[in-house]
Image (cartoon, rainbow, N blue to C red):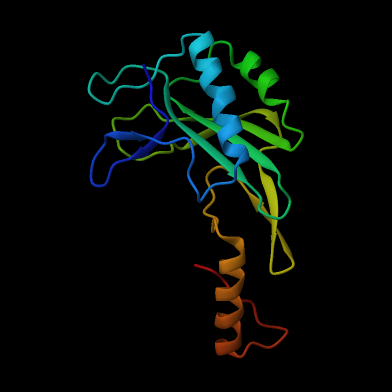
Amino acid sequence: SFKIGFYAQRSHRIVQNWNCALQPSIFNNVLDVISNWIQQFNVSIYDENSKKGLLRHIYIRQGQRTKQLMVCLVVTKVKVPNVDQLIDQLRVFDNLTSVVININNKDTNVILGNECIMLYGKDNIEDVICDNVISISPMAFYQVNTCQAEKLYTIAASIATLSKQDILLDM
């Protein structure tokens, strides 16, 4: 059996959680679709102890302003059996913009590997922050709380007393 949730503090034990208050509610619906696909096609779940199994992580992103949706499966092999059926099932979401697999076959606790393969749509989603359109790839860092990030950027820009020719970087 498999669990969908988060790691317990300072552990690799998964605490089942389908209803995180921090994530968009559509993520629960996406997880339902993926869970059904896992069960329907008996998709093997990666086991850290045996180092066997295909699916390591489910990674979902959504642009807060654009509502564009990215689903990324972190897997141990390039070939994901029956992935076309999953894509067909995910297409019920009108805002599905990207389905990607990320290959992580290393013995590591790092979530993402170095290689991404686009399976459906675009290889990124977009969001808008401080009136700028931002392209977000599966590997990119992006603040999950867009409104709070905008407030921080505005404060930083005002303290820095920037001119129109200056560029402010979030690093």
